[in-house]
Length: 548
Ligand SMILES: NC(=O)C1=CN([C@@H]2O[C@H](COP(=O)(O)OP(=O)(O)OC[C@H]3O[C@@H](n4cnc5c(N)ncnc54)[C@H](OP(=O)(O)O)[C@@H]3O)[C@@H](O)[C@H]2O)C=CC1
Ligand SMILES: O=C1O[C@H](COP(=O)(O)O)[C@@H](O)[C@H](O)[C@H]1O
Image (cartoon, rainbow, N blue to C red; front, top):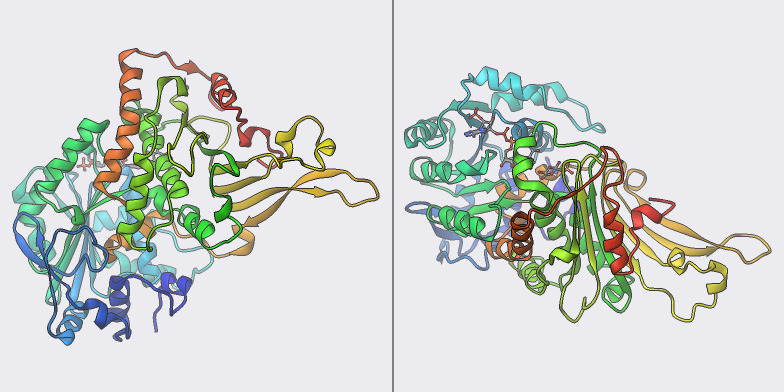
């Protein structure tokens, strides 16, 4: 029996999404006992330019405005689910992201037996390619998991046989109609489900959505669209993009991707916090002095300079990746693990945040480096600085969350630490990448007859504890989109709240033409940033820690 890594990971009895079990059911030709009941009430009327029937959205779409009609006959639902195809069209298939991430992630899912039995992958772009040329192009980028290489070549061949290409213009309904015909040719079963991945520059998102919705949406199943960032460049343009997309799609059909939400340690944040008694009680201003969200890359904007010059590091990393992590870190306990419950809590925390002030921003430049101090004005986090720093062309590549706890009041051992109490502060580090790890800095007696203390790490290093390769973020997110799981995608009100925090300062930086502090390639970034941290009595954990 084929079981994909996701169910392996959760264990057979743990809750998983309905669609995923349908997928497994389809593959295994069995029907898990829990699924028929979950399928009840599940034929939704969807808007995709016109009304159509679909299976997606239940029970994950709490906010869905779509009307759900119950299935009178469960066996009918079962039959239709088994008897369907999923087509994934990568729009912008000739581009960097498609080659680097999307096709390899789809292959990894296929390799792990996570894709539905009947699936096809289509590349769409203007570049003229034959199916064979697309396969050659993709073939160069596919890899098998290091820890599971058996049948790798065969699996690649089987995957590539399911890949096809259609060349067309992004604004041509006729070209999308041609795509529709090709999709239909490959679709088997009663329902055809279609996923479009917009891996293209943002100025053509709406053209593609308009054409695809009018001529290439599925008449018999669901149609979903994954949209890549950037989602606008400020509140206004983001709002316009959302409104334009919603002329052709419902919110439930739009999957706004932030690939940081698909990273293993970001997913684990809620588990760490809500399933461990030792952390949750400490998770507030009472015990936490500051939180640091750090992103750095040891390379510049190679190959993407044009995009980056226009968007900059605040829009590229802070307003999305780091802010999303912050929201997950700081949110209240959600009512459940359902997508809408989690996203509701994230929106609340974002809306409780103070708009970023120019005084709390330091901008540096080799090719973009910014540090900022943010605050959440609610009872849990009042007065706690959340410091973000993000930059390219720095001395190291890392993404991590550092939680610095308060000093121990009336510490019996304070004389043993000398004058620098910061050195004795507990610090929890969640290292998202590279070398995924969670470690907690604690004070300990150095063994011996004297009483000397030092700082040591309780260290959960993933490579030692979990030797199997960690799936790429795009794998998790693509699978979620196929299954209709929206938890890790950005809802439009989340996006509005995120832009509201950054838009005024972005405008001020532009209007006042604030000159960035220059720093050398490969350095630790602008010196001025230390003053910003000092203003809030913070020292950057990555710069002081002996284990950093
Ligand atoms: N690359 C990355 O690492 C990341 C990318 N993203 C986002 O993903 C999306 C795709 O990124 P990426 O693959 O790097 O983008 P590319 O610049 O490589 O563009 C993808 C494809 O779109 C077409 N295209 C490019 N420019 C234009 C244009 N001006 N007008 C019409 N078509 C154009 C080209 O295909 P053709 O000429 O064949 O039609 C190109 O192959 C973007 O929105 C990007 O911001 C997000 C995170 C990371
Ligand atoms: O979204 C983006 O992310 C990448 C970094 O992603 P990672 O998974 O390699 O950490 C960044 O390089 C790029 O500028 C940005 O657009």
